[in-house]
Image (cartoon, rainbow, N blue to C red; front, side):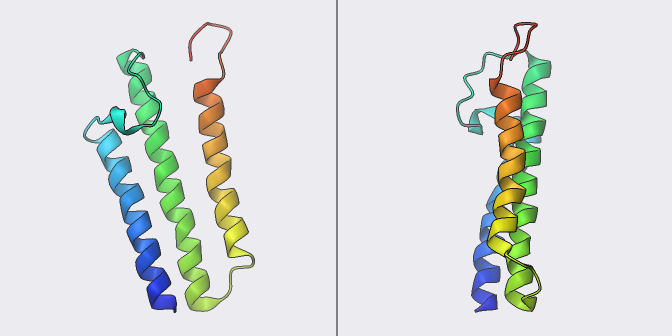
Length: 105
């Protein structure tokens, strides 16, 4: 069963890394859900870097599931992966959706 889980998680991680690459290296910020193109170029680049970082963290965190499948050494792997992904996503949503005093997003 570890081989199946490895293949499935590798596909998911690969898609996350491909999206991160497309957003940063190819400038495809339109791939970010909810982005409507209203930021200046420097803020758009920052948004792209943050979104790509979240995708890389998600890919890395899903690797814990593979480690657990092969070794059984990770305590509560589902909860750890959920926290490892949810915390950066919450930070990203807070950073880009909470208005600052300066009037920028």
